[in-house]
Image (cartoon, rainbow, N blue to C red; front, side):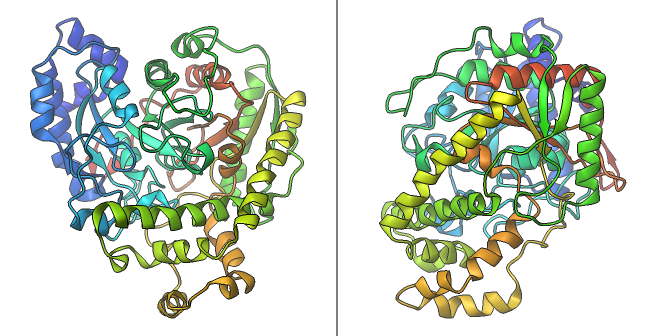
Length: 499
């Protein structure tokens, strides 16, 4: 199978071609590996190759809707037994960390029939909205390699957009599926809390804000994978009811006319880029043409407080994660990136009472969003506050990087928190991506749909946020939009290489 034929398929149709004898798993794998060799020097999306494992799998006859389809795992929390895992960190790379067992989500990916060819790049511990770890180098956007593919699932997004694999593993603790989907012209759905497993080691991590799924070029690939991976696991925070129809069936059916509330301003109060506004206009026009009612509306909450509470959650979690990883691997504190250590240092400054108060505010956000969803079926926002930023644009300013080593020597970082520097950094770092964190704190499903490209030719997706249990509704609308305004055949060029 040559690349031109390979790229015409999504995962479902590729598996069908294998099943019908029009091609075979080894030919499909060869096309994927050849594509990786061709484009990896330009995008740097894969950090660990698993060629031997993939070759052996290609000679098996797995079952499932994606039997024989090349696939990447994200190198973060999607552990594959005995395979080198870095979580984007020099510390784990130097420790040669190799998990003792598959993560439950990996078992379910394998049950879907995929052939794992490697692990994709991620920022250290998934803590940033760009994918530029010191350990593995920056991943670049196939649409324009001077720009980011987003994060933290940026490696997976770049690989799918570049045509290496038709779908790839991802996870989302604050936008890490939806942000890369928006940056790379892909479909990305974040399931609701407890919809898919994260065990055995990460179940209900950070109170369940982080969830696993995939990045895809087609809606049906995402839906079919969720049909396989969704479901209870021991230790999960809840046992959720199954949908009335399969998610793949939902993606094939138009929704009823929907009432959609459109938020056309940043929850941080920062300016919305003209292209983000244009993406909203594009989405609203397409929705109206399809018979949906769209009007301006915003959930009643303090967006700045949502951002602060989200960041407190991540800072505290980072403090715990670094301690846990050092205990597991014996790696040194200095082996972690300066920014990661700074986050952990700030996280240790918060008291247990402050953290508990923060967590209780999540209830207020859930209630405000629930009241919004009593009036509107879905919330529509831009997925990003601006087009994908340039690689290096989100680096910590040089003056602050000079100060941080001094700050890290202090016995406490309470003064750092009280100074307001953290709030200012939060605003600076979240200004390009201010819309995605709410769905994580509220635990509801949300998706980014590729409906708009900027004048410079960069994708900029539209986000839809649903009420609890609303994954099927999101797939219905996504399928309808995909049929009305197809994006599958819209592909980038990479350094002059046609995709």
